[in-house]
Image (cartoon, rainbow, N blue to C red):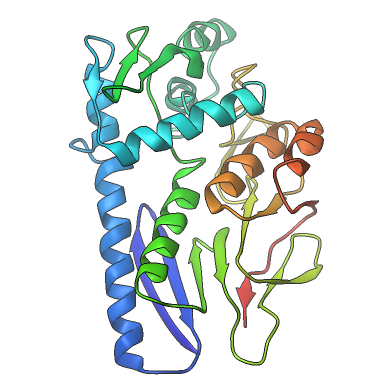
Length: 288
């Protein structure tokens, strides 16, 4: 098994390929690395010259035209916002800043500050005009942050690149929490993955994403606050076991796992779009 790893978008990516030409494996990993770095330059909230940062700085003043791929992602965000009844919401950035999850200066804000931030939260404040691919923010202070969908989108683009190069079997993982199993290794039914509840499953042409707050959180006065913010209340979602979603599309998996972590009752909606939903306590990675 060939394993190639690189860092992009604030996490570690991994490409697993069945035994074969090591040089080809390195070349493919190089292509995927360039693709994820390209997406980082487009989507990052932490690169001042990224397209998302440009939108956040200017789209409340006048409409901003974006390239087709980014517009497609924003349309997907809009659709998922509606599907989850506003629970998946990439405009929670003002709240993330308020709680200190952007600058890592953690604090518990006042209820009044949360209420003021909530006025700038809601995907309905991001207006999309399809014909010209224009994006406009209805209020000053609206900010997009695509952390809850970006890894899934990046994995999907990596899989697109692999298919364009004729790869039939590979596993692409972002941070160990979002992955896609392309085809199956030789003499196997798929790529073996372990769900949060410890159950093992074989994935073939399927994606898996897991959301939880085990790594990003802080404590204040004995209370634990995770980084996944409920856009309906402005407060971090209650700590609970992580959520795993399996579907055909890693972008869909990534977004829905976050929404289900915030609101588990959305599982019935998710099952209409996904192969399976699992809720449990840990994920232990994926391997052949």
